[in-house]
Image (cartoon, rainbow, N blue to C red; front, top):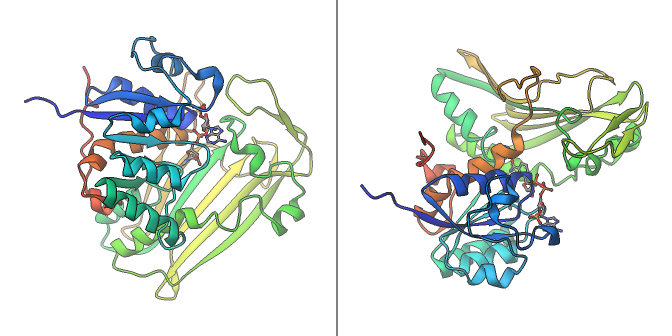
Length: 354
Ligand SMILES: NC(=O)c1ccc[n+]([C@@H]2O[C@H](COP(=O)([O-])OP(=O)(O)OC[C@H]3O[C@@H](n4cnc5c(N)ncnc54)[C@H](OP(=O)(O)O)[C@@H]3O)[C@@H](O)[C@H]2O)c1
């Protein structure tokens, strides 16, 4: 039987975008037709070279937005550092389905943005899907699937653990590591709107269980550096900063959705800058789902240990892959905004390659 193929564009090639781009090059169900970059040093490079593969795809990266929008393509995997709803709408109107790791995620909190996306989907007869590891997988599709193993659900807790020393990333500075603890607690670096990005995931789990969220409560605690902690912003890069002793070296955000007057879903985010912090939190980077009820369960989603026995944090590549592996299903979906519920059980063809 002939394999159905999908013409795809990769929009931006950061850590997330590169994981998706590599998948589009290697998976035979995808036909890579375009790559949009913002970095002038990447313009004109073959897509293969950008992800460390042979430069033989014949698709050269461009920073020409109009050229990309004019391409004949079925879909765009959208992975810029910040979202751009007007750009997403232009892509949708031009007949390209869009999966965005940068959101917007929540119709409830961004109704105007979703009204624009709805209209663009109808005009282009295309679909929009917001995706990623969290939001997009660990806090929604994963726990909801796991509840199928339960007789009764009391409380679902999803935790993201990231040690940013062993897994350097661009978000370290913007998240306020190195700030004065009292000042950060009074005015967190993560904006008060941050939970909105996760609201759709919480609502999906609650709705899937036949419940409605009554309120979401939030907490923040910090850990302090017990000595100066030098850090890098990328694997293999030299140290780019220092978290000074006594400043913020760990952050634990907690967001709880309540239903029937009790906590139903709690998301925890533990981010630390290595082991010289007090209080000490778990440094094994992973996602963890714990469901209290009958029978209670726990699932840990983590990388296999590397040659040094360290488990790298795969949240960013997983973010690219969870969208990339759903791209065909998004193309085949009915026009409009599609969630995991609409997509159903995604069948990721092309992954088994002997
Ligand atoms: N849903 C989730 O679970 C989840 C998890 C992690 C990240 N994310 C989102 O994924 C997106 C990409 O994250 P990342 O870790 O790949 O970030 P990154 O490594 O910093 O890459 C972002 C890319 O965006 C492009 N870019 C740079 N400056 C830009 C600007 N001013 N405007 C538009 N694009 C710009 C660059 O692309 P070129 O290098 O190609 O020029 C850059 O490499 C972010 O929006 C992030 O919030 C979502």
